[in-house]
Image (cartoon, helix red, strand yellow):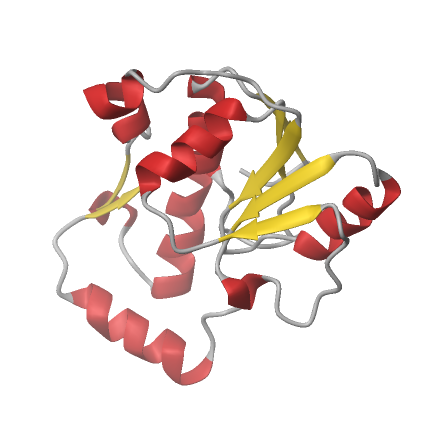
Length: 168
């Protein structure tokens, strides 16, 4: 996010955030980054452990886990799908499912063993994660969007998780 917030976008974001009483973030690292980036008092930024629907909503807690023979990756912000596609190309006999917005993979060469899924409801998204053998979360270097929600979702469905080293 730090690379995306420059110029007018950064100025408008700072103005928009001046009126908010509190801001909630899901990692301690974000408190420092957002405080500096948006010139906010850290007392206004509150860290909260993610407790999304996959952890406490009965529709999600009842999802059946039926592991299939594919690897999943998901999300949009800060993802390094170019590296994931290189991995998939090196494993042509393994199916990969990527749940993302089309613009996240624009201009990338998609290997034949990769299926792109988009425009689905969160419940279906969680079912895809639950059924995967593994979840690969490729995050770009020096990007604040750190995928913590995807990490918790994969863990809640007992899906093996691979994540590159990240700050925070």
